[in-house]
Image (cartoon, rainbow, N blue to C red; front, side, top):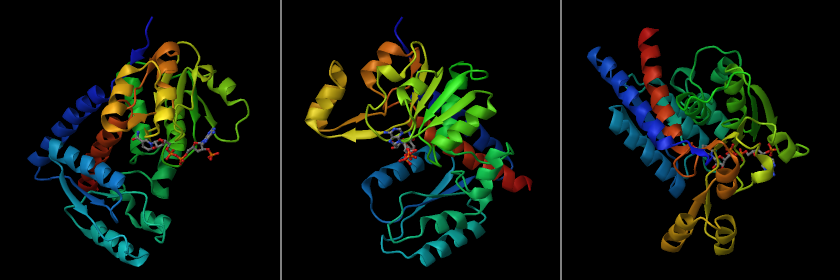
Length: 306
Ligand code: NDP
């Protein structure tokens, strides 16, 4: 039986419709949620990410503002900027687009965001809430993974979940959220011994590594659900021809644009071995922005309630 493709765009659209209803309900009480995006410097990838977040705000009726200090901004200047946003009543969520320029103390800037406005869920206060299963914003990409599973009716409780990657923004929070859903969770990383063997135990395999097509068929238990968080832009013809062999759409896309996006999971292997999987693009990625909208509306609700 061919593997089921878990369509992230469709799930994102469902969630955004629900968010829009939430925004309307708040509007009836005279409240408009507001999101401020801080984009330091002119990194093209970051500009695209912020533009997409602003577009999503417009789609659901959230007020948005993008603030673009120059790449030469100092840590102190960014701290003052964040403090100003913390004080503003029309702003419920603050997102600081990463990476910040090398000379900036990123940890200090992120720590300065008020936990009530931390819609990325990166503040240690909110990380603590996540660990102890208290209410609070949860990081967007990992929350998106749970939404994909639930809305695709893939059961989590009692299942073996293996996460490859232990970053603070994806791997670790994904592991905690799956644990809270009663999966039996294993976290793998670059020092894991027999990684394919451990991964093959998974009913739910999450790849958040940052290496194109790293997870090949020998990592995947037949019939498993595979969630691919990786976003890798390939421009090397040889690499594209190797990874995308037998995938005419990817190869055509490369010929037309000179680049192709692939995940951390081998695109052909996963389609042949998994029971269900998220494609790249169009899988996990769209959920990240949808969950940012969810967190912003929830921050607006909580701030008015407290
Ligand atoms: P990080 O670089 O912060 O973490 C990568 C993790 O992968 C680390 O824990 C690292 O292990 C592990 N790793 C690296 N090489 C290996 C290896 N050879 N074997 C086993 N584990 C390995 O990345 P992120 O978590 O920030 O992102 C991961 C991917 O997800 C990237 O492709 C990124 O672009 C994408 N991403 C996508 C998002 C979306 O919206 N879809 C959002 C965020 C990220 P160790 O700790 O031992 O070094």
